[in-house]
Amino acid sequence: MNSSNETLDALFNGRLTLYQSRAGYRFSLDALLLAHFVTIKRDDKIIDLGTGSGVVPLVLADLYPSIHVTGVELQATLLERARRNVQANRLESRIQIIPGDVRCSGKMTSPASFDVAVCNPPYRKPGSGRLSVDVERQVARHEMKGGLKDFLAAGAFLLRAKGCMALVYPALRCVDLLAAMRAAGLEPKRLRMVHSFAPARASLVLAEGVKGGRSGLEVLAPLAIYRRGKDYTDEVAAMIAGARG
Image 1 (cartoon, rainbow, N blue to C red):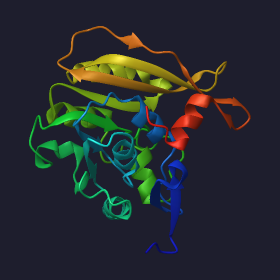
Image 2: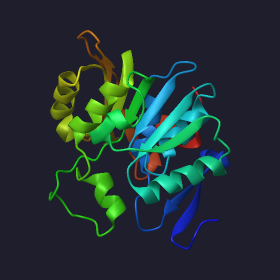
Image 3: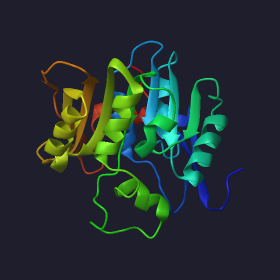
Image 4: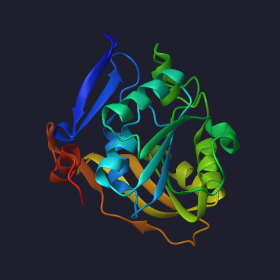
């Protein structure tokens, strides 16, 4: 049962349901963009670093029926909520939610045990920007419990050789992201810029790297969220509807 402090929201026209905090951390479109961007193969084992309420594992499990996903979360309230979301969607056989700190990846699980890692990391420096009064939002948005390099190091540790890691990050920090990926041994291989509207500057970047990969970056066609007003483009509308590739 959800409390008065939570909402129960439907995704993919009701295929999935999601408990979320009314005032705390709530997932954004970033999670859907990431889930549709990452390269997934049949029977892949995937880890989501900083899973929050578990939305990325739920979306991936719905889109790819053969995969298994592990979500890692540091905050106890979000960890508990993510586990309830898995149960509510009857996906316990394919999704596992575990406690973990990306700064201590060796304590999470065995090294080189996943094919794919995904991450929507916090991207604001501590003390920068407006700090939410809600702790869940603070940790999700600000690098208070681990920064980009920590998440990348955890991904590199947990991925098998030639495994891939995909992230969504602010376009403003694209150079920081690509440089940090290469430094972590996750060679950038795919890149897509995300724009609110086609003529606008990019607001987000989706990037995917391969552990131990060779240099060579594929820059995909840009993704626009809206056509005009709040009218989603066909591609994004399909994502929101849960269209399977």
